[in-house]
Image (cartoon, rainbow, N blue to C red; front, top):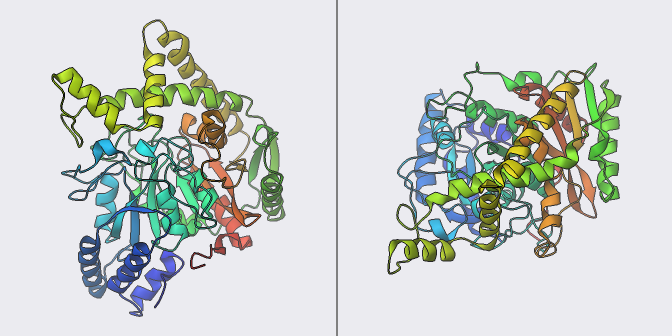
Length: 483
């Protein structure tokens, strides 16, 4: 076998028919990862991967292996991994090795999945293009002069380029769904509270969620089944019963009501993106869904709310990096100067920008005017979604208003960069689940379709996504990475 199979389900079937081994899959993935040309990986843990693969082969031979056993995967380098360096894409954490793994990593270990290494990301997950990593930008495998989207660009590219069969990312304002759209894979953000954040480097704690990148909706459901569940170490996780998410995939969308918010088809959206999304809506209608025009009139306020709450939480979370407890330390003549030198050298410009914005929003005299007001509008945005979900089963929108843009094109225009998340961040503000899946190409670059469901209704969301995916071939498109 030269390349990895396309999906987890195909690889799992090969493993069970003894037509390959976990060790062979790991070697193929490692070979592809070492040949990577997109700056996808910050670290490859070859020997750890081989040891996990050998253990997976033992379980497979015993006949009681879960579906993810022996499947090679990639981990965003903001998720803590015991004994494996974790940098969060920042110089300030360079050399830091966590003493324990995040709960999501432990759960995948329990399923026998094989972690290949850690993927590149925007520093502390702050970015929409993956150009803010302290270790250089990630390139899009569809066209190397384009961004892959951020902040989980490395994880998205690992799957899109065939270097792993799935990957984990984190989504604070769209950082899984947006890079999934720009690289042509499936990327999913769960309901807030579905997946443990324990052991994940905190960015904006009321918005962050861990989720998977895969090559199909079914694969996405498989990984979610392994990740979902209450974690005693994370008080924000909900004690919900285990769900068979794959059981819903075959039900189709007949008689379902799908909301189409007019505010998500905005002036300035690329014509090919709008055309592909409207074609996708017509396909769902052909399958028996009823399209319902709905209004999410507060969508325009989402950007302002997000860029007050998120920097405020980031400024508090990143206060812990002081040169004393983690990673980099630059000594000064006294403690305060040590703090200043360490943080001045360790943090990149985008992180500094957001910490300054967040500190300002939380400062005396401005807290009520900005932060408290943003939280009130956040409640109104959630209430508006609640009213819409009284009328519809799911909402379908574009994931991003554009396809992948050129590296460097928006670096000097932060507001233009932030607008890339305008269709994804209302989902984080409201704590809802959302998934992006491929729905076409524009001038050779992927377009993403976003399906949003009500809280804890991931099964409904996957049902809509699977119905569309099974009626089209867009998810089978792959970049010509060997070119």
